[in-house]
Amino acid sequence: MIQASNITLRLGKRALFEDVNIKFTEGNCYGLIGANGAGKSTFLKILSGQIEATKGEIIITPGQRLSFLQQDHFKYDAYDVLNTVIMGNQRLYDIMKEKDAIYAKEDFTEEDGIRASELEAEFATLNGWEAESDAATLLNGLGIETELHYKMMSELSGSQKVKVLLAQALFGNPDILLLDEPTNHLDLEAIRWLEEFLINFENTVIVVSHDRYFINKVCTHIADIDYAKIQLYAGNYDFWYESSQLMIKQMKEANKKKEEKIKELQDFVRRFSANASKSKQATSRKRALEKIELEEIRPSSRKYPYIDFRPNREIGNEVLTVKNLSKTIDGVKVLDNLSFIINREDKVAFVGSNTLASTTLFKILSGEMEPDEGEYKWGVTTTQAYFPKDNTKDFAGEEIIVDWLMPYSPEKDVTYVRGFLGRMLFAGEDGVKKVNVLSGGERVRVMLSKMMIMGANVLIMDEPTNHLDMESITALNNGLIKFPGVVLFTSQDHQFIQTIANRIMEITPNGLIDKISTYDEYLDSDVMARKRQKVVEVEVETETESDDTAE
Image 1 (cartoon, rainbow, N blue to C red):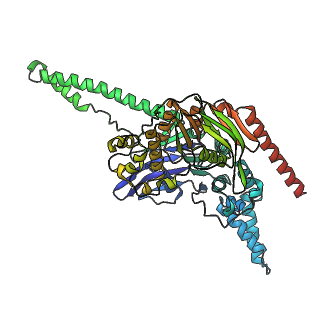
Image 2 (cartoon, helix red, strand yellow):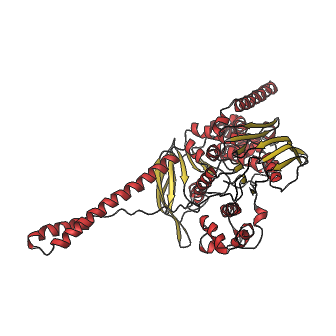
C-alpha cells in the first residue's frame, strides 16, 4: 500500500497539488490521468521520493519495495544490460557486488566468512540464484535479443535502452510499481507483452500513459488530476469518461430542478410576504429558500483542440504507385525492392518493429530523401502534407509561430493564420512565441496547424501522437476518421490505429505484408500467428542451447 496524506506542492504562487489524500492498494492498477501540465509525472516523482512535497507525507507499508521507470537513458551507460536490469532491486545488486568483492580477496578472513554467509542467506531470500534468468526473461519478452544481454548499455539504441529500463522497473516483483509513459518508443509487440505482464501483476501499479487502449486494457482504477485535486474512480478510462460525464449531467439536471424550485419560492415570497394571512407561509418558504444550495460545477481544466483536415481539392483514382523501391542506410538495406499501390480510399497504418523502414519510406515519399533504386509516382490530383517523426530541425529558427506558418497558408493574412492557432489552443500571447522555445506537445500542435492550413488530400504522418496529451490525441483521432483523403501513418497507439486504418502494411525482412483489414483483425490473422510461433521457436532453441551449455 502507498498513500499520499495531505500532499501539497507549490511552484512559486501556484499550487500544483493542494491537500491531496489518496490511497493506492495492493492488487490494483491505477491510471493517473489529467491535462498537460496537471502534474501527472510530478506526482509520480513525489510518490517515488524524487521530489519533496511542500507539505504532507507519503506513507508506504513497512518492508515493501517501490520501483519506478527511470527516465535518464544515459544513466547506466557504464554497465552491461543484464546488470542494469538487476539494479531494479538495488539491495540484491549490492549484495551480489559485495559477495564478489569478498570472494575475490586473497587474504580471506574469518570475519569475511561470517559476512559472506550472511550475504548468501539474504541473497537466497531475494531469489538471487534466479536473478540472471529472471532478468533475461523480461528482456526477451520486451524484444531484447539474448546476444544483447552482455553488451554495454552505451552500445544500445535509444529504443533498446527504453526496453532495458522498463525491464529494470519490472524486475524482482516490486510491491509498488510506478510507470511514467511506459509504452513510449515501444513497438506494438512489446506493448502487447507489457499489457499481459501488468494484467497478471498482483501488486500495486500506478501508470501514466497517453495510450487509451493500454490504459483501458490494464487499469482497474482511474486517478483523475484536476484543479490540484485527485479524484479516484473504479473502472478503466472509458468507464471514467462515461461516469464523469454522467456525473456532470446529473449535477446540471439537479441544479435545474433547484433553480425552478428557487424561482417558485421567490415568486411566493414576493407575492405574499405583505399578506397577513399568508405571512407565516411566506416566512417558511423564505427559510426553505435559504437552505437550497446549487452544486458548484467547475468546467474541467482539460482543453480539446479542434482538428479538421479539409482538402482543397478532391483526390482522383490514381494516388500513389511505388515500384521496386530500395534504400541502404549505414550499410543496412532498410528498404528492399518495395512495391505497392495506394488507392483513393486508403488509410494505411504501417506497423511492426521495423520503424526505420517506415520512417525512411515516408522521407522518400515526401521528397526529403532519394531512393537508391526504384521509383514512386504521385497522382496528378494529389497534394501531400508530411508530419516527420523528428521535427527538431523544423523549429530551430527564431521566428514566431504566426510567421513560421505564414508560408504554408494560401491566404497571407495574419488573422486567418491565427484562427488555426486558436483552434490548436494557442490563444493570445501563445501565438507570438518563438518556435525554438516550444515544448514537444506545442511543436506537434503547430505541425498539425500547418497540415490543416495546407489543405492537402494526402497526409503522411510518422508517429503524430508522440508528445500529445490524451485530449489532443482524441481530437486528432476524430479528425483523421472524418478526413476524406488518403492517410499513410505510423503510431504506437492501438486505438488510434484500430479506429483510423482500413489497410495494414508491415515491412519485414521477408518482404511487405499488405492486408485490407482493421488492426485487430490483422493481429488475429494467420500472419501474426505465424510470427508469434517463430518467436516461440527461437526462445525454445535458446533455452535448449543454454541447457546444453550448462551440461
